[in-house]
Image (cartoon, rainbow, N blue to C red; front, side):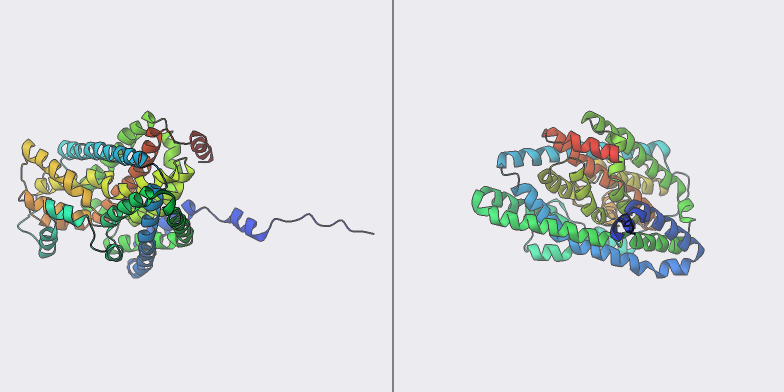
Length: 427
């Protein structure tokens, strides 16, 4: 008697994928586990910090070739230099408008709530490390000269994103200008970009471990009490960033007809990576992938997102006036309206050179404090909770840059609404 053959079972790989939690879920679990480890076993939390360093090093390892290849493909792939100029100009205009709003937004919140008033923290002078950081801050002409690398390999080795962006822009424009002769080179860099995205997917498998270690080390080293040490400032920074996201970025999404909640769900993975690691760079590879899926053309994603990492740091820009005025309030220094406006003008220029890496904003902050004769010890105090603050502002940086990509795509009339709605339903 013949036996009926058993029904075919799903391949083991499919079964494994169906049972495994998503990367978002794994990152959330890593976040909770890291907090628990750092709180219950502080020495263990601090001890596993090298695991977080490994993750960040792996990310930094792919940043230079990824940015270079995606920018070149994004610029040269446009094919039309007039279109390239138009896209670049629209991106810069949008960046400047939103970051200016962010500066005034932060200034309004810190003056309204005055988190540093009445704390009676003695500030007598500058610490040597922060004074040295301020001394290294470049002036206006130095910043202009610094934009242009003497060697692209040196810029890549040092991780100088701004120089890498400038070189990539010139390279991409030249590649687009030679037309068909440059097609083999364009195809090569397109292949490199695809390779690096695949490379990134392997690195992202380690993300939950890196997130666990980063959070455990922070909580283990500083304790949960760090959230209360300067609680008013933390609340003001987090509150102003949250409202900026909802009110300003939400209004922008409404204007360009993008469902904001669906957009936030779509970018939740790069946001979580940025928030937990306090590094915008760590989230860049995932953000590039997500925004293409969301319906933004590759050439716009490849141009706007990396450029935004130097010119559109909404969270960092909002934080800098909050931190400056907070230090003045700690020291009992009353900054006039004119001084505050001059401070905003200064930050408008200096914040453009803030690298999208943890703690880089402290260099700009110390330079601003020096210019306005405010004690640098205030920056030393902020250094103690900078990790907590950096997580929020870095998360907003990523949200702002992803939205900027959608804005430019809509402005160009090339945002794929069908793919966007598919992603909205899937989210």
